[in-house]
Length: 70
Image (tube, rainbow, N blue to C red; front, side, top):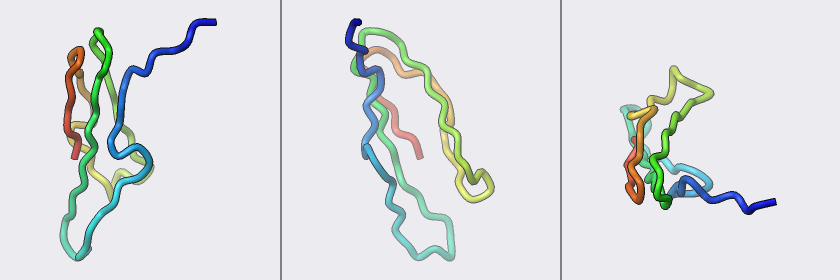
């Protein structure tokens, strides 16, 4: 069986940290990096859509490209 290629690197890898105060909107960012020679499509879904807004929540990342998601 061939080894699967990593098609998307995510930073931070394990968790997002939000810094307060939490009486107004706060943001955190993900960096998505496509290390491949192919276009990668992504979609991010939240389990609490009324509490978390993801922008852009879907998109296209060009080969060797990256995108910041808020």
